[in-house]
Length: 207
Image (tube, rainbow, N blue to C red):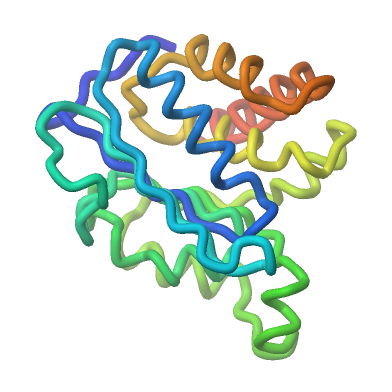
């Protein structure tokens, strides 16, 4: 995949999830890939109560002259939600009609326990809400795919592969894979690459 031209010389991404899902690691991988592509990047992370399953959000701003490292509401070209409800929590950042949402449809136990499984919204209802903002919405069971790869902790790489396939990221797949190899926990590099490829291929089949 070749690097895509950025519209208006910028590209904004919001990653959201809960502690332990690899949100921060994914932002690091994207950051390295962008830097090696020769582009400017700013990353702002909010950890909150990440260690206790609290919400985690990363703002990623690619391009020159971005000003604040925080993505303005209504300006993100891409939203990646590592937990289904997080997609709605941060839906306000999506650029109406001109953005992509990639959502892990697997609900995490801490969130389920907090609101009750009987009150947890379905993937269909969440997708309906997201599609009121953008038609490009992709729900995938990243956790199930990660289990197929052989390691439940590579679901973040599956979501990253899905993002690369679904969006117009201004960085190449090769740059992303090199960054994965550099930043993945020792001994899991190949598993993470396989996970990335699974996520990428899944979305390409749908587009």
